[in-house]
Picture 1 (cartoon, rainbow, N blue to C red):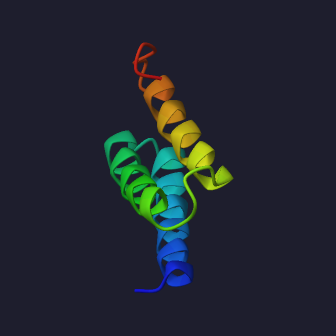
Picture 2 (tube, rainbow, N blue to C red; picture 1 turned 180 degrees about the vertical axis):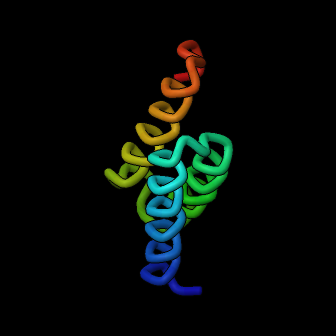
Picture 3 (cartoon, one colour; picture 1 turned 180 degrees about the horizontal axis):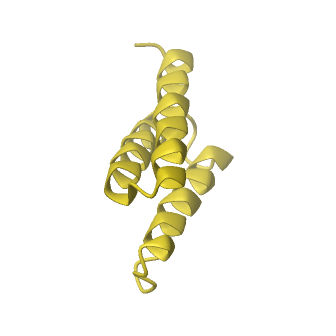
Length: 71
């Protein structure tokens, strides 16, 4: 899979995570966000701003779950 299509897949997982997060399905949201992050770690350059977005989303889910030390 080429890097642009990998980034599209990462965006899709991120968007699915957003839906699960909004539904309160936090474990499913984490799973989707973590898949997105793994793709984003290998596809773009290591300092790409999408990585920050992935880490922020994962932290937000942990915060919503009350797991503040993980957030």
